[in-house]
Image: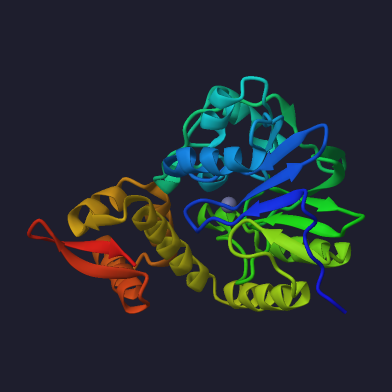
Amino acid sequence: MSPAALPPDIVVLERGWLSSNNILLLGSEQTALVDSGYGTHAALTLSLVQAQLASRPLDLLINTHLHSDHCGGNATLQATYPALRTHIPPGLAPAVRAWDEEALSYTPTGQFCPRFSYQQLLTPGHTIHLGGRDWEIHAAPGHDPDSVILFQPELRILISADALWGNGFGVVFPEIEGTSAFHEVGQTLDLIESLRPSLVIPGHGPVLHDVQGALDYARQRLDLFTTDPVRHARYAAKVLLKFKLLELQQITLRDLRLWARATSYFSLLQSRHFAGVNFENWLDDLIQDLIRSGAAQAVDIAGEPGLLNH
Ligand SMILES: [Zn+2]
């Protein structure tokens, strides 16, 4: 059996880990984009979208969830396409209206997202017409309590956001705040399996053709985290550090320590899971881990010790 392929009206702009993938749905009557990447990449996101749309406008913008790497291009797209209608999951709608950067996670993660507005909600259980096709909206809590995933039942294509990747799933953010959510991650993986997608467009990384393989791997990782939550806490802290490094490309250790000190998720993770270790030592140990694994390189920045993204 030949592997399922994407039809030409569904275009995946595969980005990196700082920016989420962007998925363009091109109908004859309507165009839609799912997720818009990180704020520092907004100009690139716009040019990638414009290159696909040519002279057509973008009609709908959909955010699977409101993490900074999924909606950082919203403001630029809204300014470029004045008639654009933006749809977000309902959970954080009041926070978007008030632009509450604490509730939106931008302050506690030490990330940034240009302010945007929305017009409509993506209500789980409903269907939305995107491009030329109907997509089911499913709640997908776990990585983010308010995330949705989108399923196209005729083609059996799933847009999985950060609920399922080729190498697991995104950091389970509620766990950082002390809210148990590993169980929800498992339920969302069960939901994905029950939809029997023929292929999955994840929030990061290439399109998944071996969906069962990805689910099996994700469940293995979930088991590891569930039996050893400290392992997840350590992973979450390293992801936040690596994300900052991806954003800045290089930073002195002094500035990185200052940033981590001011970023509340680090103090939360440290006090909850590593309370016996001094904060600076804990951070330095994480940094050494990033260097050892090849995710960062130790460098001199104008005579000061620093880190280079690698
Ligand atoms: Zn996310």
